[in-house]
Amino acid sequence: MVTFIGTREMQNHLSKVRLEDAITRLASMIKDDYLRWQAFDKCARVASHSDVGVIELMPISDGRQYSFKYVNGHPKNTQAGLLTVTAFGVLADVDTGYPRLLSELTITTALRTAATSALAASYLARPSSRTMALIGNGAQSEFQAVAFHAMLGIEELRVFDVDPAATDKLIHNLRLYPKLRIVRANSVADAVKGADIITTITADKANATILTPEMIEPGMHLNAVGGDCPGKTELHAEILRNARVVVEYEPQSRVEGEVQQMPADFPVTELWKILEGSEQGRMNEKQVTVFDSVGFALEDFSAMRYLEKYVMQKNSPLLDLIPEMMNPKDLFGMGMANASALNPARGNTEIAVPINA
Image (tube, rainbow, N blue to C red; front, side, top):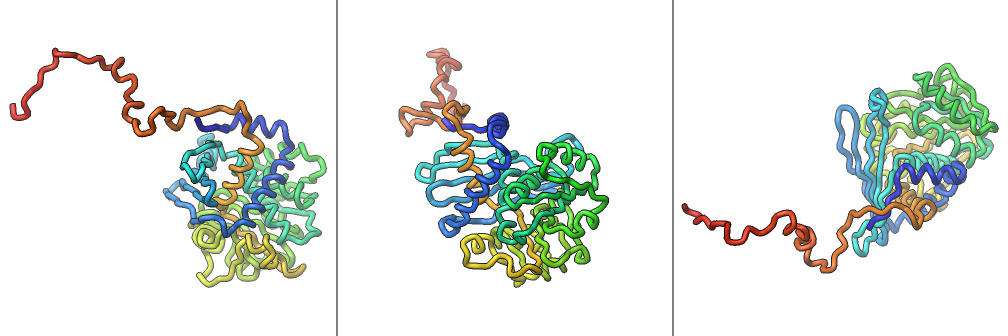
C-alpha cells in the first residue's frame, strides 16, 4: 500500500497550522537540502511543449530517496475555469524502487515556490527591505505575499494585475493579514516605484517585458518567478546585464529562465553556493539582484519530505497501487487469481482445430 495525501489532506493540514509557519518550516527544509547539493543526482526537467502550454516531469534523487513531480502550465486554462498549474508527486525508496508516498503538489508547489523565493531574498535583498511590488495577482500570489511578510518583514505590498478581478481576489484573501498594508497600483511602473523588492509572477507564455530598465532603481531585488519555460520571460535583457543574477540549477535555467535571453557565457551564480557561503549574495547596498526562479526538482524533493513528516498521519488514505504477493515471482498467478470464476473451464466441449484446416 502507498500512502496518499490529497487536496483534502492538505486543506486539513493548513487549517491546523498557520500558513506562514508552514512556509517558514518548508524554507528551512529546502535550505537543508540545498546544503546537500553534491549528494543529489540532478537533471533538468523533461518537458513536453504544445501551443497552449507545457507538461513536465521533474526527477531527482539523493541516493536514498527518489522523487518526481508531474506538473503542467497552461495559462489559458483559467478561461475554462481550470487552474493554470496542477501537479502531483511521488516519493520512493531507492533500495527497493517502491513508492511510499503519492501526493497532490498543486497547493504544495505554491508553498515551496514562495518558500524558495523568500529564502533566496533573505540573502539577496537588502536587510532593511519593507516594501514589495507584486506584479501578477493570480493563484500563487498570496503565497508569495505571506512568505515575504513572514520571512523578510515586508510591511507594504503594492499590487498590480492586468485583470482587476485578480487583484480584487488577492486583496480579499490577504485581509487575514492586517499588519500587511496593501496598496492597489494603477500600473506596473506605479507599483514598482520606490519598492525594495519586486516579485513578478505572471502567467502568459510569452517573451514579455513586464519590467523595463527605467523602472529599476539601485538596490532593488527582483524575484522573477513567472518566466519558467522556453519562450516565456518577464524581464528586459538589459536589466539582467546590470544585475547579479542567481539561479537554481544553471543547465535548466539557461533553457527556461530569464537568462535564456542571454549569451551562454553570461555569468550566473547557483543558489546553493550562496546558501553554503562559498559565494556572496548581495555585494553592496546599491547592487541590483535578480533571483531567476524557474522551480527545481530539489525543492519538490524537500516538499515531499515536508508532507511525509508533517502532513502524513497514521490514518492517511492508502492506495492499492503496488501488488502485495505471497510469491513475488508469480505475477501472472496473482493477476489471474479470479480468472476461473470469470471464465469457467469448458472441459471436453472445446474442439481443437488443426492449424492448417
